[in-house]
Image (cartoon, rainbow, N blue to C red; front, side, top):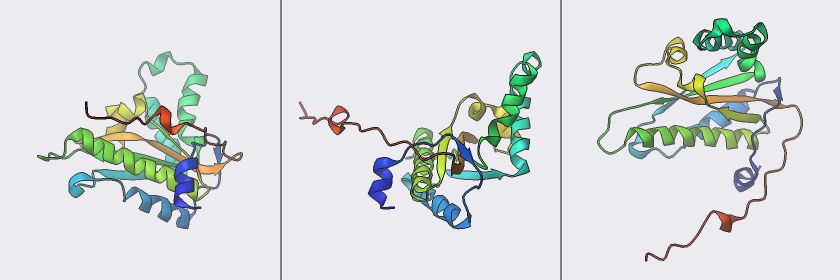
Length: 186
């Protein structure tokens, strides 16, 4: 797939099944992450690849980290346990925050977000379904500790990848002029 075609047409694909991306697809997707904009060449990102039985363990971690889990119904607990099973491959995106005189933490977070976006676009180009989730579990320090994150690291999200159950929907046709305007400097 042409690079501009992938950039113009990428969409998230939420219904995923086996198989996970193969070794060649992964190499392409993972290499794309390494080209993210990165002021100072800090490479503030790293990624955990979770698949197979490790996905079930991740679900257990999610449940352990859930507030008031004792008050949840059995069905609610099962839903939490099954969250990492929504795709055959889950990638945990991590930002390693580094003290730097010219690169603030927020810029380092944005670099990780750029790496994730590059992976999502590469996945689309490789015909791999993918989507990015954040939320309370990404911000939960119990989840971070269970995944052995250091104190200066934070989860930037969970990227789910697999084979689309159905063809991806078409990208919405957005009007460029709705988002870009000239500024005259006045």
